Image (cartoon, rainbow, N blue to C red; front, side, top):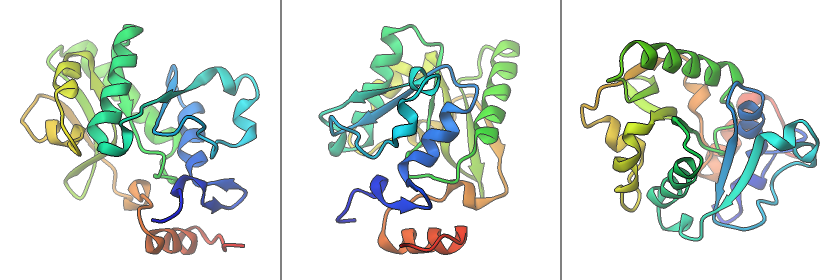
Length: 195
């Protein structure tokens, strides 16, 4: 797209704010917004009010435009620096992800990783394909730091690493906006007309 898709209007907010709202309203401890620009000016003013403001931070990643592996690396390095036991990866251009979905993944990860130490991740899947959001345990950090270019967590999940997949039947939850056509489809799907 020729425009910043996260700034596209969807109802009364920019598109990027929907996934952020789901994340800060979930059980996640903290949300890092990994961005290639220093401003992240798509974030709605309401996110700067407490108590929401204390639940998120912007992490500038100058190499973000070089491929998703670079954004992942920035996030994993931040997680390592504060000794985070696991991270959840989700995309700001997935506006239909819900807090309930995030919480379901968190609950399953907490339960499974406490019971079975070999569980490295809990991934959401639809139509047998792993898709974000996905939770990755600390044991996967070294592998994530070695990813290159446009390789993402899906590349690792397909490597027969022990983990859990949760099937979500609603493909709309995974809708992301990469093209003008995707945006028009999203507007039609949600019943929101572009003003």
